[in-house]
Amino acid sequence: MAPMRRTESQWGSYSFKKGDRLMQHKVQTAFCLFTSLLVVSCGVNSSISVEDGKTHDGNQTTVNGGVFIGQDCTVNGNCRTVNGRVSVGSNSHVRSLKSVNGSIKLDDNIVVDGDLETVNGAIRVGEEVSVEGNLETVNGKVSVASGGSILGTLRAVNGGIKIDNTEVTGSLVTNNGDITLENGSRVVGNLVIRGSGGSRSDPPTIFVSGASVVQGDIKIYDDDREVRLVLSDGGRVTGSTGSAIVERVGE
Image (tube, rainbow, N blue to C red; front, top):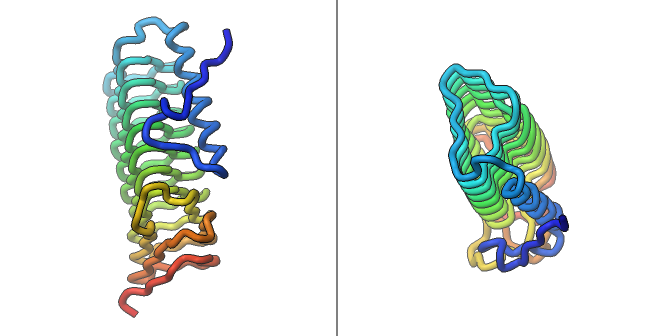
């Protein structure tokens, strides 16, 4: 059976810009993967729940429904849904969590052995959560509470990013959102602003405060795009700030 293709108008409010082909490929791949579930899945119109304290082996997959993992659970398989949200209770250990149209919410003290990905939805991560992969959304905000660890790339194409006392080993990437690093957060890789800004009229702003640090560079891929970098309360960038307009508060 030939793979299904989706036109630009069907992808919602986001139009992929030239030079952002990696995210376009990821979204299209996710869409093809999930639409295949319409053919092969059983019980596609129901949610999936794992009760508190349970261990479950194998993938958890649905199409029209959410995936709800309780507290103190272990899921030895990937969790996926097309139209539904994903949530995980505290002190659980899971693998990759993915949705197309739905948010992802993690409570405290969780280990994710894989990626967190959604296309249309926010991602909210509680305290002391370790994500041993990438954390990505296209249309939605991302927030990571104190003590977080992201071993891969953290990306929100059309949405803001806020991290609190969190370490991102890879790069932190957005097209149209503001970025906030607070309370000793650290980005080991680069902080990247892609695209031309689309319909956004005001410049995106990067806030680095509370002794937070970007160890890599500030990379702005559109030379004509204005980006503000606000450093306060010991926040710093040890790499190049590129073409960003730097404002130092309290100095």
